[in-house]
Amino acid sequence: MTGDRFIFLAIGPVLDGLRAYPLRTALSIFGVVIGVTSLVATLAIGAGASENATEGIRELGANLLFVRPGKPVLDMPGWEMSIPLNSAMRRHWGRFRG
Image (cartoon, rainbow, N blue to C red; front, side, top):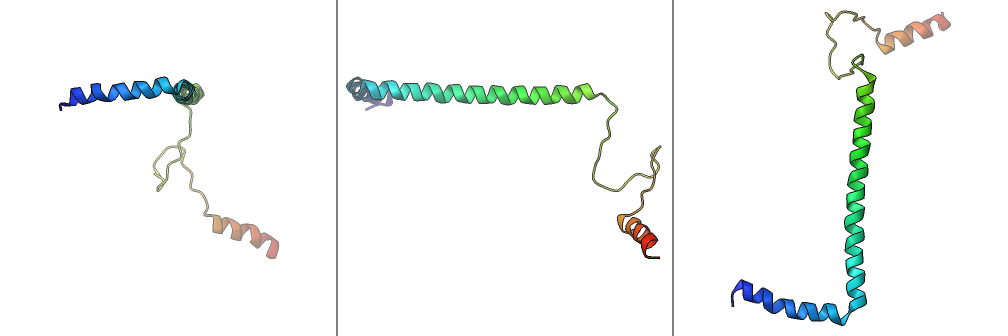
């Protein structure tokens, strides 16, 4: 028995089952249609939200501040050394203690 003949032999009982239970067949088809439609709608909403966010960022322009982890580059123009938090806290609390 070849593969093509097996497929033709299997189609007959499948069609008999579909004809025997028309309500089950209609509900199954309806469920597949709803599932595919909801998947397409979800993907479309996600793509639209992504495009909306990208456009909002693009409208901000090029004057953005980028924050990256790592050590600061001290020779950048406009760079100012910041005081470590513990030193700032000591200075602040020292005024009230002393």
